[in-house]
Length: 545
Image (tube, rainbow, N blue to C red; front, side):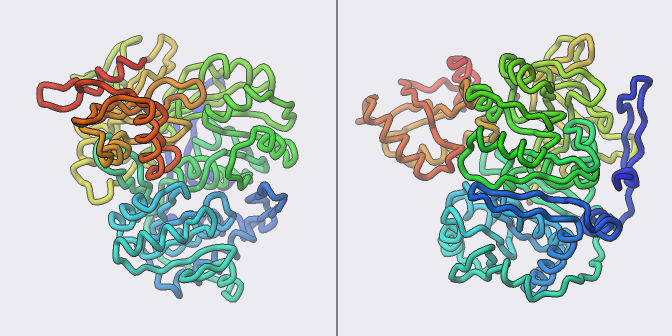
């Protein structure tokens, strides 16, 4: 029996579809001890992680392995001064050490801060200052140690530094350090309500917000893994995501292990559809999840047969009906769309037992009470556009939804205004109860599966001497869903030209992570403004549909 059943209660309708779902867990629930170690003790040889890279290296880890290595890593961390509540950033790409480190930090009661290797020095400076880090564990690839070293100089902070696989000056080699540690680690008392994870997510104004989740968060992903991904006990699930993004928590560890499914990890830098499908077929992947960008590439390059694949899912942006149709016809499995945020777990999806409908987000998760509200806060009718909101249960609890924003109680109260959680996303509901995404109420840009806050790009644009005012919006793109467009009012003495356009792009893109790159520029003589003098982004977006 999968261990997940011990932590939840499920009800099903007459057609076998999940109709009710609730969690049950002890006050000291800890994923490291109560899930990973428990499975390891009962079935130590059960497969947990299948890892390979582009160089042909391969490692297959059992739950027994994960327990041992995480215990050794926890011992290293403790010797390095890491204690319950301390914040530790992981920049580990798709290296298998991520899974050891995550479980080790959970066992210690430390707060894990996953981060992408695409961060620039300025991004690191902000995160180091905002989070009060105690340590960083990183890859030695992509000049990450160099960037961290530079960022620490700018912040004048001293923190513990570990790297993996190779030596680097000023960093302790964690891969080597664990070899000398005990494989035993006594339980540290933690609470289910303790902070577990801190993700930085893009906001519409200002720098990225710190989203905090507690130790209950992994359990909330049972629905994600079992009823949307349709992972199975003994199966192999493959979510295409780097560990720095929340999507890794959705598809590369928590729900899958609770269900009893192993996770597939392909460590790569540059996406190649052929390599991806080769991995799926070589290792016998049974369930697969990727952003629409990946499916667009697969369809464009030609989709080979994938006989072991039983189910495929997608999220992050709207999937074009043509891509849905061609993938389904080629592979023989439907694509199930799903919807949620870094602040939440899965809210809406095409769930097990329902036929996936192209273009639809699906139906609300039985785990949450979800509704659509108009600007007046009242429910909207069928076919009317409203904001997706989550209504807490009678106890006032909302497991799986953020417990706070880092040092920003005002923002937390704002998203929970009127007693409901506001997603900021607009949708409508059809006569069959299916939800259809309409867009963001705010200005977040979703490009290639990433979320980008306009402020992050606008802040860099304003450093260029030719830019007097600017606004950044997302415009439709067949390959990325949206691409980033900068609309610029030039300073006195500058005139629009192709040369200036290239100059501004190069200036900014050198300072921005690749997923934030400006792809298009439009020069404008005067910015449209609201009555309060703010740039009218709604007007600018309407010009670019």
